[in-house]
Length: 80
Length: 322
Image 1 (spheres, rainbow over the protein chains, first blue to last red):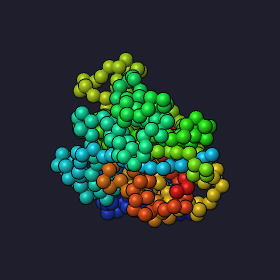
Image 2: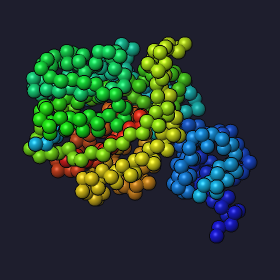
Image 3: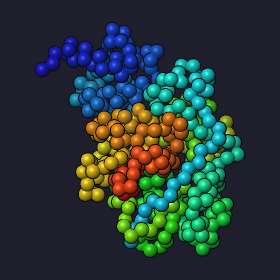
Image 4: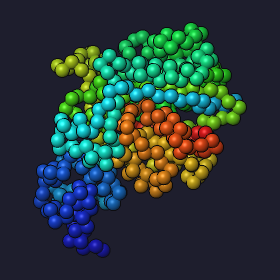
């Protein structure tokens, strides 16, 4: 069983890759929509990353309610 | 009795909208980023007085330079931007092209799945003995529905018209079809204004406006297309390795690459080329077919899988023999 800290590190690495950001610039409390990299393509990149790595399709209405990196992470944990 | 695609031509409007022009208006969207991510460098945009019917007619005129127009005995026109609410644009097209009056003509309203449905209708009518040479025409001008400040849609969509002759043949070169429809997705890609539902009232800026919920369309596509391809391959009693080339609706490079990776397809067998056209809705598949034939990417004897998907939601797929 993967430890929670490893899971978080792994998730941040995937998110960083999707957003073309350095992992060190991402913190769990960040509101991801405030990133300068955030645009309509970034939305697709994050949705695609979650589908590809966790096999979860996030409906738009759920996605719109997620604010922080932590929200995204917890959503994935709840829907795996 | 069977049906085959005999000829394809397309027409692109003269005006070109480049990434550099878009970058001037929206500096945060760099031209190179757009090209790299979306796979589009430029798109053609219909002029103020140029309609879908004009684009379709121009494509059909090119095609009828190579074909005796008296042979055409049915016209199918796929568009979501008809010339008028009524009469039928296909009737106007018959007159514009100077086709015989002893023929059938009808419009059908579909977007990115439209060409597949057009091939299916043409094949069905030919195999039923109702006609022999169908002129299947697509024409679309989404640019006229897109707001000036809607960078996402302006960067993706381009205008075009295409014309195809589907003709009878001894061997059926158009294979089995699979269709799909889910009207629950209607709200995610829609032009609501100037509709019966809204009492034909236009908003203040005086123009019907395209709304696209990109993330939901993306979700629809990644959920629907992999099983669609599996079904059409099985229905045609083939294996994925039997398919020489895949032409999916050219929505954008990003989504195509995602689908190809999800389905573990050989990317060298998949058409990804909307660089100079953008997403031209129902025109992308016939444009891709024509380009692929001319550039030698597909040749006689090949099996080519075609799949269209989008607004509706509506989707469809078939496998053709070249």
